[in-house]
Length: 113
Image 1 (cartoon, rainbow, N blue to C red):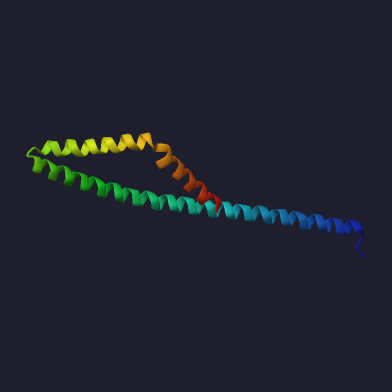
Image 2: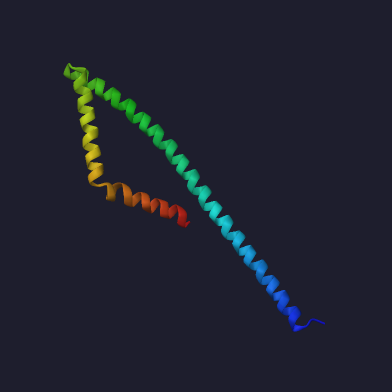
């Protein structure tokens, strides 16, 4: 015959198993989120590196082309350099709306899923 104490011991044992199972599920969900975030970050870094390399090559080509069109090669490099300084100033001025907020939202979205 099962006494009330036996039922309580069984209940406590089952509650402990449930808590361990829930903890294991939380761990697995955390590992999944971290793995997804890291893999997305690595893929994004690879894409950015290829884009940066392409922009550098195109910038060199544009600088040489502009410089030969103007008759002085250095003019092309100054013009392209000035363009990047202007873009840098604009990015700095609007960094919160262009860079910070979208990146923060992207990170939160990746971690919230």
